[in-house]
Length: 169
Image 1 (cartoon, rainbow, N blue to C red):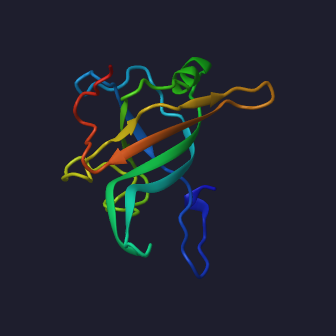
Image 2: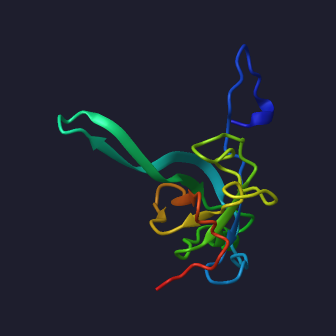
């Protein structure tokens, strides 16, 4: 649904995922991924995570809790497409582990410690400037009866900025 053709009656709602991604190569000192074409972003499913530990008394009652290691995880559903079949194939790339992303253009929505969960702020301070990081698990579904679809899961951390080179062992 195109957001410019939506009439809100009584209540306003958020529509679409108007994001732009810039992908940065791991261990390339900030170089963008060469030849990659931004695919058609279909959806974004974001989740807030943290490690938690419950402390119980000798009677079993929970008397305190410890929460640490907060991070966001977002799975993006994509359709590789472009102005030619060759460029559509470039947008279907599955990234190397450690690739980082700057996302912009999404609605500003707070989640956990991030005042803007989706978008990476280029001029602020951490955690708002921390990039999204791809670890693994990207998938591509090919079919004789439909278009190619992809799924990629990215994570964003409070203390891990994604700006330093990835260490791949």
